[in-house]
Length: 388
Image (cartoon, rainbow, N blue to C red; front, side, top):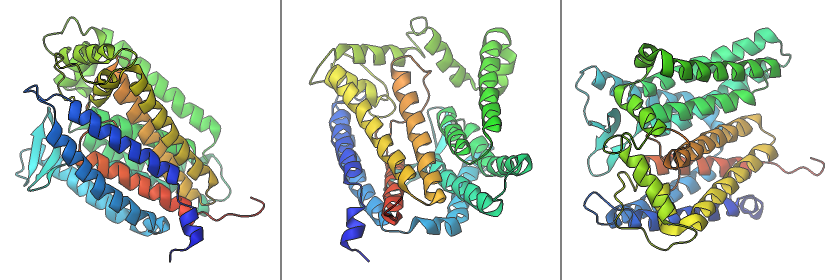
């Protein structure tokens, strides 16, 4: 039942940030050029429609007791895995209805009258809830922890996270798979596992990256096992975009031109620049080109503020389960923002990954807004104590 105390716990700053994201998303998508050269006005209108639907869903979730997710998480996890398995079977030649393949990956379902549905966007959230439940139940069961209990928890986290990670990686969708990996690492870091094991995990990650770098330059046959040809092309374009300017490096070069054309402050997109996927994965290049340095920095600061509000909710709650969920959301959003913005300025290789709340797409926006609703639910269930 609603009362003043409940309404007072709502993070109105978080909702105001979402409002600003909606405004920026609409303006940026409306300025983004399509292949024809015309602006993507119709997509901007559809994005606002998705925002309206998503905000109502987020508000509904806000008043839902998130603790019930502990009992329901396997249902959502099962739905997500079923949809991902459908895409996997379609890759193997099994006729699965409504499966849609584009951009070299089989990652979508085409829903009549709605558009494309990307199950991996929702599976990220389902995985966060399942990992949070796994950690919470394990820590309740084993109040006294040792190496055996910590290793057991690592095994449980692996059992929950490895299947969806591998299915997404096999689509192939390297960008989303990396987001899932960042979720796993961030949630494992706050799970209560001994810091020596955590350091060992990070050391293993660093060794893995070093092995990849060495293999890339000296043992390409190993790289061929893990990466598809179009994924390798993206790394080549990242290394030397000018060399592949007429092919795989074209998108990155145009992105850099767009951001550079914005200078310190701007008010419109340079119509002479052709930018593929401008309204989607490369929306930050449109923002940089349309609003200049000031606009780009404003977006980055808004993401920092968004993350800080989610961290605040994680710290203030007295429920570890809610804190774990918020941590997973922070890990997901931070990596997506870093990777998406990084790939537009040649800091990171180009991957098919959206910029949360800003890129065009119903699946990405709806999943992000569900996260907002859950964070607000965590805040509303947080009890204030006089001496806490």
